[in-house]
Length: 84
Image 1: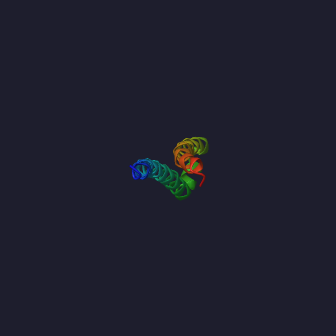
Image 2 (image 1 turned 45 degrees about the vertical axis):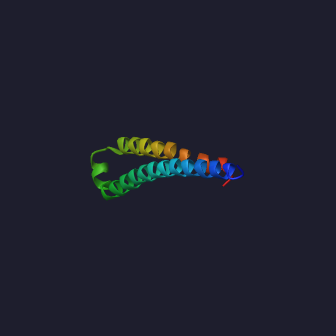
Image 3 (image 1 turned 90 degrees about the vertical axis):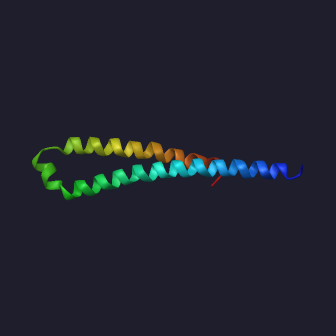
């Protein structure tokens, strides 16, 4: 009976780690999209200027960055709750 609390803590910790890993994976994917977009943009700066597409590029960047920020907030929330 004395091991029951230890067992419960172990199970809860395992479930929490799995969820945190899912959030981290989603955050890494979103960060990869932003990083890839920035790389593509710098490779095509002249084409963007010629097409006068700066506004559209900036809007796309903001959309990707907002998605990354939302996914990153999920990763940080459990860490803040744990006091890390």
